[in-house]
Structures are given as structure tokens and as C-alpha cells.
Length: 143
Image (cartoon, rainbow, N blue to C red; front, side, top):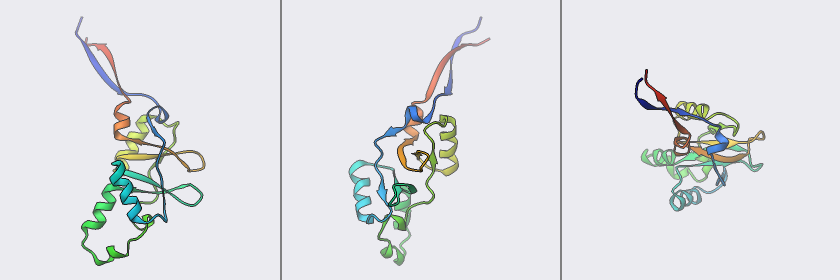
């Protein structure tokens, strides 16, 4: 008989690992206020909502830095979150499997997904760090 060794796999649904208590920003929020939220809370991204509370975009730290690295005079015209947000936001349902979340993160090249309900309203976010918690081990015997 062989040795026992770990077998790693992803298991579970998004709702089991998502970070609840999501902080959102409105698309008409002044950019300065959003930057303050990034600084104060160490966020990597924030879901952007419209006046009905529906997810319409995402503003990521990488988006902000890319805009200000351009050294373009038009940067002075960027005043609101909607001016630099990425739209549509990368979203996922809480009932989806964590495999789907990983696939979406890599295909969208993002660190987080906005978890939305049927009305497209943000319920939570799920990050790469959250998904690491979904990795399970099972002991298997090598033959």
C-alpha cells in the first residue's frame, strides 16, 4: 500500500465565502470621496451603484492608478466615480459554485467579483482571498 498524501480541491458556493456588509459608491460620487474610501479602508475595489441601487460598475485601485499615470491633461476633467469606473461590473450570484467565481476572476482580470441578487443589487463581494478559504484537502492513498 502507498503513502497517504493530500489532494487539494475547491468546494462550495459563493455565498459560503463572500464578504458581506458590502460598501458601495454611487456613480455620481465625487472621485475625491471614493479615493478617501480606498485610503481609509484599504479596499482594492468598490462596487458602483446607480440611483436604484443596481450594480452598474466597479472602481478598482488599478483603474485609479492607471488613469493618473497617463499624464494626460484630460485627467483634470475626471470628477465623478462614473468617469473612471469599469462597466459593466464583474458579477456573480451567491448560489454559483466557487469554481465559477475563480473562472470569472481570471477571465475578467480582477481581484473581486460583486455578488448580486436577481435585481442586480450588490449583496457582498468575493475576493481572491475569500476563495483561498474554499480550498479543501482530502487525504488519499497513493497506489
